[in-house]
Length: 233
Image (cartoon, rainbow, N blue to C red; front, top):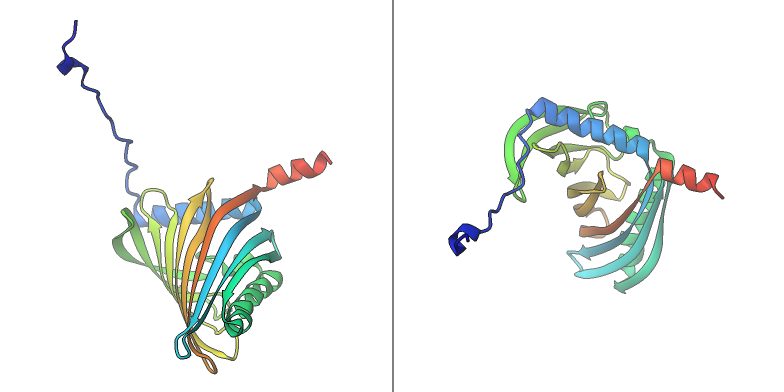
């Protein structure tokens, strides 16, 4: 019979993926983005927006259900609001409307973080939340709404984008002078979605506004699944 020493369990760790070269990581990221654009027909999620006006100390928090149907339909269903009505109407309300307008009028390919819209300049390696990432400096090829100058961080093992940060090259409205942001991403069922956005905006009338946006509970819809469902009705 084996002794207790012979019965010591053997533990193995999951194999680590090799680190990609910067060019390969960038190509992998863009290939995944193109695949997502062709397969993802829509999604829904739970969105929480917290906004604060620094000068007046007014703030509010809105809980919503967000739904997107490719390529031009974005809507929000109200769940709960707490806080100042001015913040609800003049800060969060304007943010929601601008996003809906941008989706309705724009082409998602014109706003995507790709080499079609940006020049990528490699800046080296870094660590984000324990992930080794390649860092790229971005400069937009055109001064178009929704584009920014800043940096993106792409996972060196998977090619997934983990973070984007910078400032918008064109103000979303006359009343907003400058917008700086940091946005984090995650992978859900093979698709990449934003999970957290922190925005600092300098506005002409209301002063400095800080907005935090949280997304959770993503439910992606795949094009083939939607098509099959419609065909059986």
